[in-house]
Length: 149
Image (cartoon, rainbow, N blue to C red; front, side, top):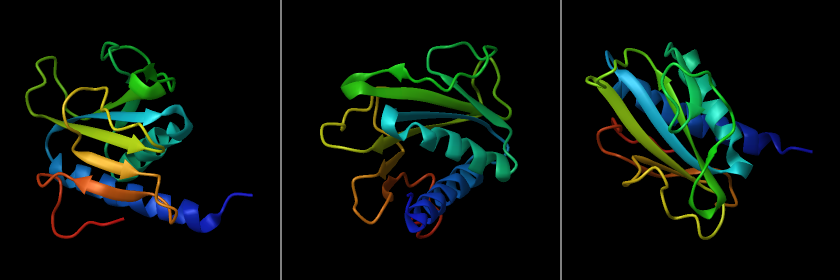
């Protein structure tokens, strides 16, 4: 049986992340790369739903696919058995000018410190905490005040 308090905590944490992303991406296109283990791939769907609920039209697709290709919930394999899924939405153009790029790393176990999308992530969401998911890092350009999950 699923622990309802864990689900509530996850949703609250993802709501905080979605609020930060929406605020930072006002009048911009959006590209979010989520690096996560296959066991946490549902996070991508939940984050997409949270962005939809906040008025951002977006969909997810595998990293490396072209913008016109249909969404696919299966991740592209990266380091440590993790996958990278891209959430795209809004006013993105072929040149990617005016597009907010956000890198999210979801950790769910030891040895998952690498970010296969390259570079340092803007958000680190940690599922290793026994109390549920915790935002370990939220980049300054995304945070407005104290935004803890």
